[in-house]
Amino acid sequence: MLSAFVPALRTPDLRRKILLTLGLLALYRMGATLPSPGVDYRTVRSCADTGCDSTGIFQLINLFSGGALLQLSVFAIGIMPYITASIITQLLTVVIPRFEELRKEGQAGQSKITQYTRYLAVALAVLQGSTLVALAAHGQLPPGCPRSVLADNSLFAMTSIVLVLTAGAALVMWFGELITERGAGNGMSLLIFAGIAARIPIQGKAILDSKGVLILAGICGAAFLTIVGVVFVEQGQRRIPVQYAKRVVGRKMYGGSSTYLPLKVNQAGVIPVIFASSLLYLPNLLAQLTRRGSGTAEWQRLIQKYLVNPSNPVYVGSYLTLIVFFTYFYVAITFDPHERADEMKQFSGFIPGYRPGRPTADYLNYVLSRITLPGSIYLGAVAVLPNLLLHFGATDTTQALALGGTSVLIVVSVGLDTVKQIESQLLNRNYQGFLR
Image (cartoon, rainbow, N blue to C red; front, side, top):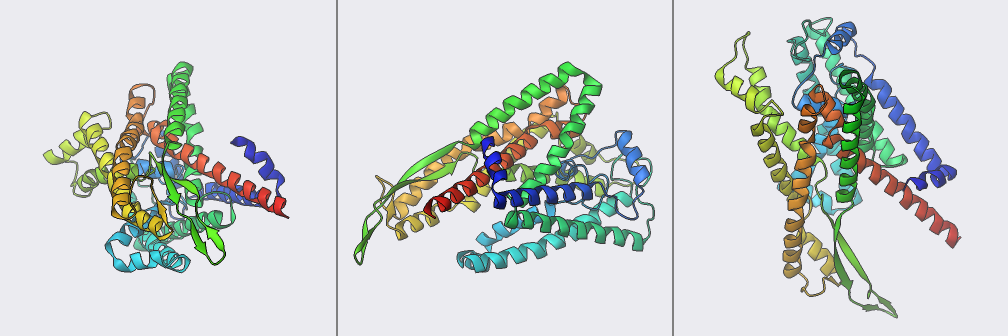
């Protein structure tokens, strides 16, 4: 598939798209290293050098932002508000009839939903920026840092930082939409890809310095095997044959063709992992917000022991259970067998051996529930791989996340999707050139 890049660079239109994408990714990485006004960058660097780090969902966001979160840079929030807003609007299409009507209106309705998603993303960016600044003002971000990373704790200074973080999130959202519209690939996914890829060499060097060449080689070998497994599962499909009946319209005959309905093994993508990580971190966040002074209550110690420590069996079991649950939940939200059956019936399509309508929907639901189980187990196994790296070479959880299964899953999935889109555009241009 990598052979598609050479013809793409030779095609002027695709070359412009690829260069635009690379330029916006470079601007995104530049903004991730640019400190926000009012932040003591020397203190931030000293805390990073002493090994201060975050835990829970902040680790995941820091990984997706390419390390910008813990530095409180201009793009510290990154693309997470837009991703969260997109997930919320997808869920609302099932709950609110108005969103369901907009989704069925086609391009006009989708544009309206996208506008609502942008508004919600900006509101979430304000909320997340205020939370980050409040944690930094109380010395809890990054945790363990002896001094506050804010140069001024006044209300005006903290408000200015929140506005800068919100503007940075809005700019990142615009970068992603611009890449999707005029570049190559899905913009939001490529921004996450860039953030994760930027952290891998840094954490690899840290493992090399602390553990040596043999441990690093072993981790790289495990990462290679993980990549092979991820590619194998991500490409896996259950192809359900669909037959279209012949129709005579005027003097022309339509239909009579055979095709298939592809159902991916990992139909939910990486969304269940993000959901599970966020929900699992809520008890720890509540414990941090209710902590007073240096004392720790018994329930706070239990949360710290069982729901924060990634090597604890309770944490691993809860994580796997939540991933399996959210995989089924998200697949049920995004894929409606009755809607697919109605679409096939509308265009005179049917599955051989099953009548159109409800029998077809029941069969699709049966097949989907069967292939979702191995997909959810696969996601859970990939997500807990960083816990194994904690015991076999990684010096902290940040290195485990940067080199772990979640990162490999995102990087490989985005890479495969981008290459497929480039290949499809090349194929389309070859057909156009042949017809001309």
